[in-house]
Figure 1 (cartoon, rainbow, N blue to C red):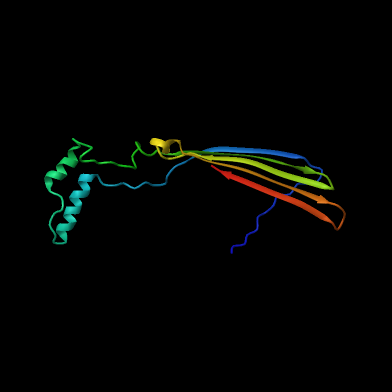
Figure 2 (cartoon, helix red, strand yellow):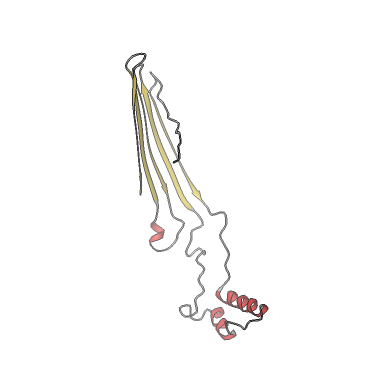
Length: 160
C-alpha cells in the first residue's frame, strides 16, 4: 500500500481571490529512430548471414524490385516515422481558475481546470485523437468555536 500526502490549499479569512491561469505549448519528440529501407535491410541481412557462413536469404533480383519502388503494393517500403505518418509536434494547453475567500467562521477554496493534449499521429483516426482532462476541487472549513472545527473536501477528475 502506498501512502501519500497532498498539500491542501487553504483560503485566507477576509480575503476574496480569483486567479485564472492558462498556457499553450507544443511538445516535440526529442529523437525518432532512423530505419533502413526495405532494400538496404535485405542487403545488410544477407551480408550478416554470409559473415556467419550462411547462404543469402534474399536474392539480388528481389532486392532490386524493392529498391526500384515500381510496385509499392507488392514490394513495400514504408517509413512509419515519416512526415506522412507523424507530425513534428503535438499541441497542448491547460487552463485553471481558483476561487478562495471567507471570514473568521468559514473559509472556502475551489479550483476548476481543463487540460488538452493533441496527437502526434498524422493519419486516419489517430489524427483526431486527443486527451481531455477536466478537474474540480473544493474545500470548506468551518470554525464553530476555539476547539470545534470541521471541514469538507471534494475532488473530481474526468479523463476523456
